Structures are given as structure tokens and as C-alpha cells.
Length: 537
Ligand SMILES: Nc1nc2c(c(=O)[nH]1)N[C@H]1C(S)=C(S)[C@@H](COP(=O)(O)O)O[C@H]1N2
Ligand SMILES: [Mo]
Image 1: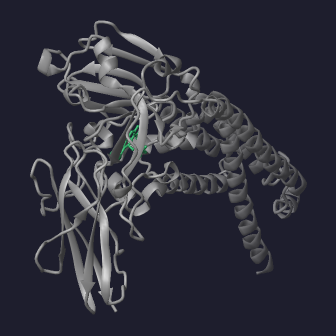
Image 2 (image 1 turned 180 degrees about the horizontal axis):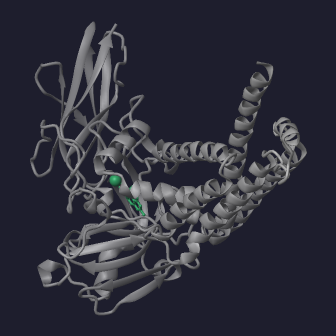
Image 3 (image 1 turned 45 degrees about the vertical axis):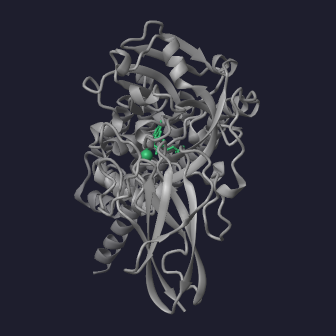
């Protein structure tokens, strides 16, 4: 009875230590991989590479769901998910290693191979070197697991043991190399902490060059400045969005797990393709030497739900894209040009396709370098990005841009089009109630209802508000900045006790009133009216 009980207790201890060595091997492997990735390329880290591969394979509906559930935290959730899976694998391989050291080491190698494959198959990967972080991590992990699990084994019984000696060994078999295990485990933990710290400082140094190239930048004054925003463009009501969205509050939607930090001094933009008679490669200095224009443009994401937050308005500084294209010999289709699609490619492998016609029809399509008087923040595309009034971001607003190819819609589908979104996506006329907030409990009496409406490049002509099933009432429109920006509106409401539903709808300058017909965001943007339910006390 007693020896049996001891045997079970020992097995539990061994199992725990096995799992622990798996975990330790996993952590050390990841630290080693991160360290190597800091040298090679941050995007080549296994967690990032597998995460990016997962993002790229996510169907439109799931991506939409993730954005809805987690908002901008969707990427954090994804990375935590990958880490959780790795922890489970590590624990399992650690326990397996107690009996099958070689097979478990092979398991580690297999995980490394998955990471390596993900890293080299990234569209932004330009060399097989991207496989090295994963492979190095796997090698370290497999060796460590082999070593640690070796300390947890009973010594091998002598070959010619007598029956009595065998019994003695069986008793001794509950013994393991405690000292060796503790030393190896401590060394591994220390090494992995050291690798982590070193990796961060190497990665930091690389990022600092890019940061310096941004901080040392002074944007030249625009040759064509924007008129000041009219004071009356901003409705004075608590809870309404600021007319100009500050950079640090501007929504961010992209697929990048690691924000690309590009050094402006080494950045280049290439323009080439169908109908380009004079292909060019521009440096950042080339851009700054040109006449800069400054324009207020409201950006909207196609993933924005009715009433959602993925819309923001900024003052952009940049180069007119149509001029650059014309100098390269590009003509729009309406003037006989052979290319109807402009495909922008980014440093992180994103592809975004816009109609050449729209980009060259006279609107302020920009290759932007500045946002609200600052160089673009890294999150918003430093050193240069596209901004085209009137088109959703996924078909126009390429951040971290590095290549512009003229082609046709027949010949090429861009990133989101491949995933079920529309080829062409002009922004739908929309309006949103900013205040009162959903489920607010205002006091009976006068309540200010206010919000924003947008129909970029067409302009907003009318906003109406309805209380419950009452008649539509004209809201007061704030001053218009430009037809490429959103427009604020307000309506004082004499609120009576009880539950009420407030609904808003806008009419754009083409005379189209926002449709009541509710659609999902896929494939070309949500439609329908925004409503807010409140309880008046
Ligand atoms: N390189 C890159 N550019 C990108 C994206 C991206 O994922 N990668 N997302 C696009 C989408 S869907 C939108 S709505 C806008 C958002 O720009 P913002 O993050 O500066 O608000 O960027 C666009 N440009
Ligand atoms: Mo978007």
C-alpha cells in the first residue's frame, strides 16, 4: 500500500516537473526566437508570423466579428490566443518527454517549422532569413527539453543486474537528478530573461533610427494651405466628437501585428505599371521638395457599423497623387489610359486597389506625409500613406506605402477583395448620434441631441432626427468645412419622461437620403439608420 502511494506521488511530481520543463523549454525557445528576430526583422518572430498568417486567413465575417468584439484589441487577443496554444503544446511535450525524449524534441522542431514556414510565406518577407528566428528558437527549445527531461529519468540499471540488484534499482528509480535539474532549469530561466532583455534593446535600437528620422523631420509649409476650420463647424455640446480628431484619438484599423517603423531616409516609393511611360522611384526628400497641399479629409473604415467609431477627421499634408501620376505618363481611363486600377503596396505586404479615375478626377487624392501638423504617426503610416476623399480606407488609404502599380481590376484583386469585399467602395452617406449616449438617463426638459454626418466628396445637405415614431425634424447643420469632411448637427429636444428612441438620417448633396435598409459591413459598408434608446427621468 505504502510503496504504491509513494509511486503515485512520485509520478505526479515527475509529471509536474515534466510539464514545467516543457514550459521552460517553450519560454526559452520563444525568447531565443525573439532575440534573433530583433536582428533579422521584428515581423519574422514566430508569434508575429503565425499571427499574421492567421489574420490573412481569417474570413471577412470572422475579421468583422473580431473587430466588433475586441475593437482595436483584436490583435492582442489573437497573440494571447497563440501564446495559450503554445503553452498547452509545451506542457504536453514536457510530459511526453518523460517517456519519449526524441519524439517530444521532434515535436518542438515541428512547431518551429510551422513558425518558419509562416515567416517566409509572408508577402512582406523577402528572404529565407526570416525562417531563422523560428528555427533557432526550436533548436534551443528541443535541446533544453532533451536536457531537462534527461535529469528527470531514473539512472539506467546496470546491464547485468541480479534480481536483488534490480529491486534495489527499482527503489532507486524514484530518485532523479534533482541538483542537475535545478541547475539546468535556473540557467535556462536566466538565459531566457537575458535573451528577452537583449532582444528588446536590439529591437529598440533599430526602432530608434526610424524614430529619429521622424523626430528630426520638419515638414515644409504647404504651398496650398487649407483654410482654417470655421469655428461654427464645431457644435458646442458635451459628448459630441471634436471636429478635428486628434492623432492619438484617431481610429486605427490595419492588419499589422507589429507597427512598421520605417526610416524616412531609406524609404522609397516606386511608381510603375500599365501606361506608365516614365516609371520613377521617389525618396522622401523628393516628396518634400514638391509643392505640398494641406486638406481636411474625413477617413472612414468599411468595417464601421452603423453608429460605430471607425471614422475620423484630420488635416492632412501631402503631395497631390494625380500630379505624380500624370508626370509618370498615367492617363485616367476616361482619357484613354490603359489602367483602371491603382494598386498600392505597403511595407507590411498590404495591397489596396483604387480606381485610377477617382484618384485623377480632380479630388484631393493625397500621398500624405503629415497629419494634423505632425509627420504621420507610425501607427498611421509614417513616412507616407494615401488618402483619397470619398473612398473607404481599404480601397484607398494605404499606410506605409512603398509601391504604386498601375494595372486593371480584371487583372488583379487586392488583399480585402480576395477576402470577399467589394472591388470598388465609395463611402456611403451616414450619420451618427454622439449625444445622448445609448441608454443615457437624461432629465426631462430640453436635451441637446447632436452628432456627425458624412458623405465624403458629395457633402451633407440635411440631417433629420425622429423621436420614437414621430415626424422627422430638421436638425441644425453646423458650418461645412469642406465636402470631403464630416459635418456636425444638433437638435434641442423637449424630452418627456419615459423610454424614447432617437433616430437620425442624413441627405447628401446629390439629393440621396440615407437608406433605412440595414446591411452588414461586408461587402461594401454598412447602411441603415442610427438609433439611440434613452430613458428620460
Ligand atoms: N498598410 C496598410 N494600410 C492600410 C490598412 C492596412 O491594414 N495596412 N488598412 C486600411 C484600412 S481598412 C483603413 S480603414 C485605413 C485606416 O487608417 P488609420 O488606421 O490611419 O485610421 O487604413 C488603410 N490602410
Ligand atoms: Mo477599413
